[in-house]
Image (cartoon, rainbow, N blue to C red; front, side):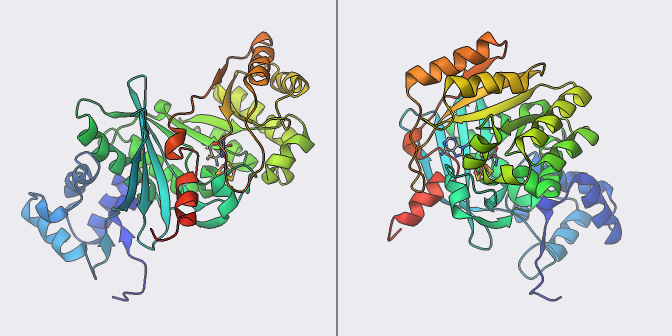
Length: 361
Ligand code: SAH
Ligand code: SF4
């Protein structure tokens, strides 16, 4: 075997793919379900400790491990930071090639939610976002996305064994719809009822607005929730904060969202990071309400988390309330995202960015 070839991670494979692998290797494909359950339902990280039937044991010994064709994804925990309110834990995880990503476990009103990263860095360059300020490094493989949920689930079992991870949001580092195939493969694995079993209706994909991919989600009838990060209600206002708006205009994005809502019958969540003097005026709010007219839309207002590379400040309470009021009066549910654990740098990409500025760690 050529050892310089990247090995395939078993966590990259959904159950049909694992069955095919077994069939190709001359192993009864029925054994695939046992291995898959060990990996995803039980979350084992060391296959040597598993009590497998002899044919499966032989395949594992022959195929998985150092110098063998298959590996497992088990990112190394570099740092874990609990917030002072005790409701959030942030994990900085190191991948096989040394890249670090963030995963966050949040306890909102007894519902445990995990926030996942989908890329190392991000190509979209939103000016206020710590991940955008880093630039793009690479896409994550499906196994690297799945492994974040497995890590968070292990941490939750230690933290509070009576609880389970119920919700997922793809709001960590990276743009999920720029890594479409890997993200869809990972979500298929995560929502499979024979494994991690987080229901698709409890999984939210957040996108900066990759128009062709939003259309593809609808065509493929993907069962997940969709959140679209808008941050501006005119072309200029949005493009000043979200450079990707130059590629997919606000007009195209809203048209894609309208079609998505009509074709899927699903509500869209619009995210809006409120920045003083940039996108928090009553005129902006009125224009947003007009843009969303007739849609089944929920607006989520996010207070700006300060980052090193952006001068802007979070909106004052007065303007934020007024903004919310205008949308509500126009008939849209509009809520503030609670800013949990700003002391753990809970904003996307912020822990990694801070850590790289601290010398000697
Ligand atoms: N790339 C996707 C998902 C990751 S970002 C997207 O952009 O939607 C998740 C959310 O966090 C987005 O709405 C993004 O605009 C917001 N966000 C990023 N940096 C932020 C910051 N410094 N303060 C507040 N919200 C931020
Ligand atoms: Fe990328 Fe989302 Fe950050 Fe924009 S807000 S740079 S799309 S991760």
